[in-house]
Length: 194
Image 1 (cartoon, rainbow, N blue to C red):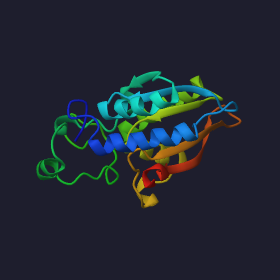
Image 2 (image 1 turned 90 degrees about the vertical axis):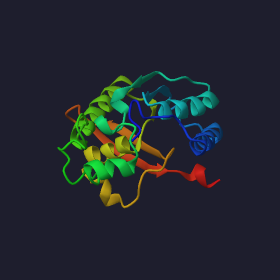
Image 3 (image 1 turned 135 degrees about the horizontal axis):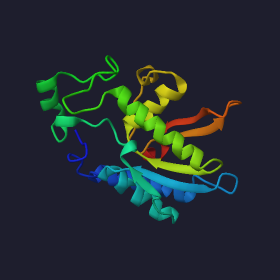
């Protein structure tokens, strides 16, 4: 469980995946004159910040900020434990079976994490209206957007989010001034097939 203290940064494979995304975006940048670059944000986890550094250096831009609001579920006492040890001590983790129950003492529940993430992403969307914003985050955060904005359980998708998979949202507003996010792409990991 790689939380605040358990995250060791990118593995060798993670570095290679980030370099592939970097080369992909060097050939085809994720922003243009119609949707100019507005900023790049990362979770405070070392692995997310290292990914951002590798990818953004090729694009010639830097990280605008890092926030704990873009982190995975805070794992509490399980931070740094192996998945096997967590399962033996606390049972198998299924955050969707009981989304209000924290996974362990001192941890967040799925719903707490989801609400934190959506508040932050809504803030970023308002701040950067009409701009492209790059977010370097984690599978659980992507899953939270799917659930909150599409009203679909991430389980229903049947596939998991890949490391460096690109999910793209168009943040439109409705007639009441609220967000009506449109999913443009989910888990585009074509750069990993090169």
